[in-house]
Image (cartoon, rainbow, N blue to C red; front, side, top):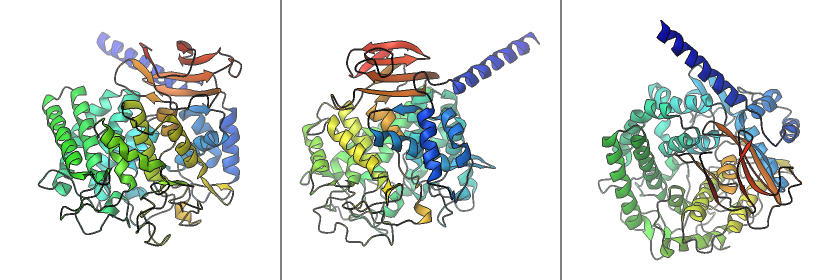
Length: 518
């Protein structure tokens, strides 16, 4: 009986600590700016055609309890950061099987149970890993692993996915080992199912472009079993993540299996999908010929740090800032602009990936660029300024007729949303943004150990101040701020990090830092 009482006491203390952790208030930033933005967003959405778990009139309360706060001198980045969280919240649904996030705000015929679609699952998990309440993402991941497979018409494998990578990178934020222990074998079984469905005898994976959620592309097909940089990069990233998760729970057999798979798949991708003539990762057809089309999917390997750190591979990134490559007034195109088949599939009638700007792909490319600038020595012509400018261009694209808008895909020259003001396209939850601010621009790099690593990608002398506050990381609330004069936030000059309100790091200038035992 004494042991039971002791267990109950420990459980109660743990519950109270978790409650305090969720309720931890921001250290520096008040919620005034958040409230101002939410009030504005609600005003331009007065019709509120669809109400899910958190309606507009409860948005401020929910957001103030769940998201990191952000403040910087660039009003566009500020506004879109909060707009994207506000829109993300619209897609949260409470179902008899737990919480899920939808992709489309309206009912879609190709969706599964509860209007769930898996194509942007990786983006959803990367965004949602920063929510303070873990139940939303716990339930959502569990839905795809356990609920969808029981459904009459299963949808999980309707689209390629980097779910294992996303689940592991979420673990790096919350260190919830029990969630990994509970789901590892199911994730392993899911990977094996992908191997049965899509792996060719030679070891690479094939996919139709429509099942990459990238239909009507220059290189793709709905019939040919093309070897694509998409699914092969995803499965490499998934294998690396499964190896890491297996090591975490001390499953040596599984760890060795996925380490071997990752090594093999990396070599196959480099040997088979790198077009040395075009200096680009490209689609290869069943007959062994390259598609000879540079497409944004060629940047995806860097999302998972797949390419070797050599001048040969980094040369590909020159295309990002080439106006005959991927550089367009309204964003990063999904195919090179010089290609004779660029934007030849029409527009608006389907979902054309032959060159138009897709936020889905922009998110992937910017994450890949961030990894290049953070993890690679060979960076070619890429720089913090290139990252910042492309991120800002992406933020500015959230507009239609002078109002905030997030849709499916855009004309690269005019910014026109090519589906128009279609009800299905409003608040389209098919990409990421907040995670790019938190983990890439500000540069909080989640890790397994007790070392806090921050690698900002803010160009030198661009900002005199910024603050990222109320960030739940490894069970502690972090504040990351820079104040050139010390007068903006009143915490002193320089670059500072606070944990639970206490300063744990200070530098005179904004630079990559590591702090132990934070």
